[in-house]
Image 1 (tube, rainbow, N blue to C red):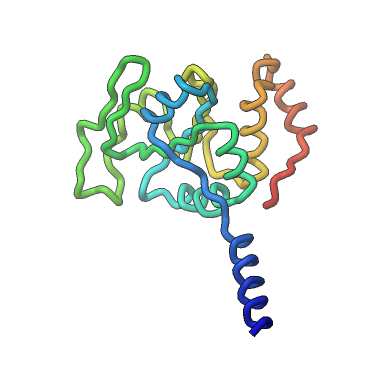
Image 2 (image 1 turned 60 degrees about the horizontal axis):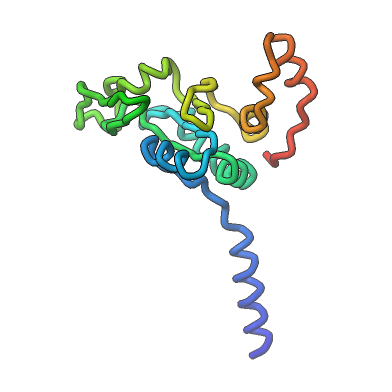
Length: 182
């Protein structure tokens, strides 16, 4: 009986360790409200339902325990469908998708006004916002965990403010030592 109990405890313990940490996604409106109470930067994943690289980003990068832990600790994470029907209030403006077609929910649809405002032209795009909700920078394309790590850390630490040229960014990029597991 003791062997069975110990075996079950061991299986249970290993299954807990194997559970991947998930990013705590909120809406943009929720993130902006949370910033009022506890200022943090915002990390926004701008995706579409039909985008293959967006799905890979969800599975391979956002599903990474190191990425999830870092994002949850240092950012408010927003998942935003660039062709969805969500209403967003940002900088005293309300953004909608007036041409949204519910019958095309899983296919190409009209672009949301907020994605146009952010000048998102490709999917996936990750947009970084400062503690006051101002746009820092968009980052386009699929990134592996260690590639995203560079951007998560450069924006979180405000190192980007010290860079005034492409050369300085290239030097930072070359010297960056990732710690996230792939």
